[in-house]
Length: 207
Image 1 (cartoon, rainbow, N blue to C red):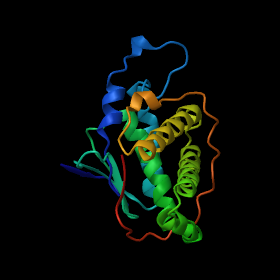
Image 2: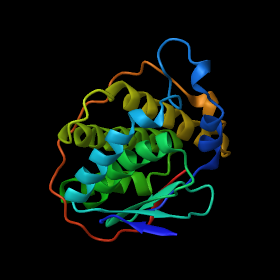
Image 3: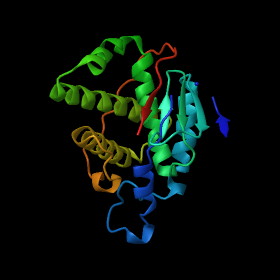
Image 4: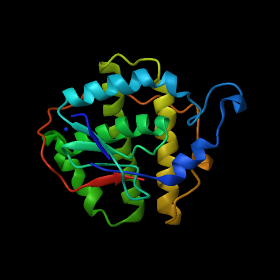
């Protein structure tokens, strides 16, 4: 099944299953990642889709091979519809940020270290900077489309996602998503979205 909305690919089962086990009545105090009700994110989804299309990317739903939850290729962002809706919202923003990095001429020089750094510690430093930069573009998009009440939600999701990725590289196995959840993270700083020149790149995915 394929739903074409308008300008990469990805899927991770561990995250989805962990979030599915969290119920609203289990909340205590501030909500954590994975606990936001879908109706509070519907407006974000619609606005983000509109903003991403206006930036020239196509958005698709497509069945993806596990553990991919979504992919991007410089022209389009693809999300697996079986992923929980809250995760879909994060992936949409997350993959938009990475798509910007791969098609913005002014950022091309930064990709060399990501692809060719062999020292493990250096690579993890470069990877974290890469993830945070993408998050900054995503936060900028949120604000551009008028979503200004979900900064903490997105920042906590970014922190949780980094912990998940970091543990994967440390252990070479997919960690339990729930064990990676963090809250009250420093807010991601919005970063101006540079000029984009859309072109196809090697498919990259989130897990």
